[in-house]
Image (cartoon, rainbow, N blue to C red; front, side):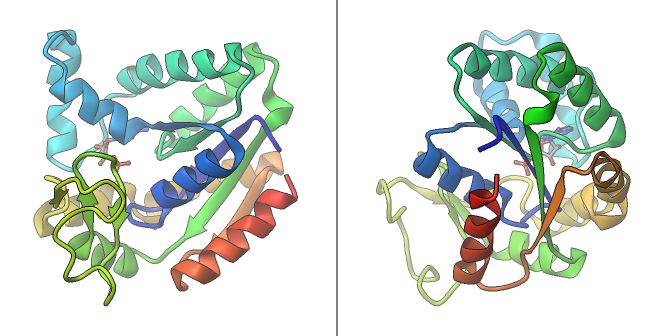
Length: 221
Ligand code: AMP
């Protein structure tokens, strides 16, 4: 398996769900920059200047690149030191970030050990999924809206409280799709295609089908 697996895709494409599977199955570290930012928001000892930058997140916009590098590179280093693989979930959202991460991988001598998987989903499906999903406030499990999950009142994994994320409301979702939808991520995907490290999974299908295709892709890394 490649040391770094980058998951790309519009919000709601299933990056978080697949990242958690890689973690469980292959003992990889999981870096979700969204989770790192939400943790920063809750941390009373965090640098107030960094916290100010979170206003963009609340409005559905991307936060400043320098904050992303500060949080993500430190985490990646920690896993590299332990010689553990790492899966990056939503950690790269514009072309500048893609290039900066690539430079970072070059300085760490691991540029040949990087794979990118796009979970391909339309903007329409993205909207529908975000508007109907819930997440566990304790363990972070993502619960898509299905017949099996619609009546659940606590997390099936840890009994934690099921919540709707603050930025999963229709107005903010619309904004997130404008900022992070297919048009916006295309230049990043083109960049990785050019590097010859991009694989694409059709994320429109059922969870089981996506899981199966994802497994196939992973077994080739
Ligand atoms: P997520 O949990 O991945 O949906 O991310 C939640 C929010 O965090 C996004 O809507 C962005 O505001 C912000 N965010 C997460 N990752 C990044 C990134 N790599 N660059 C800029 N903003 C990010």
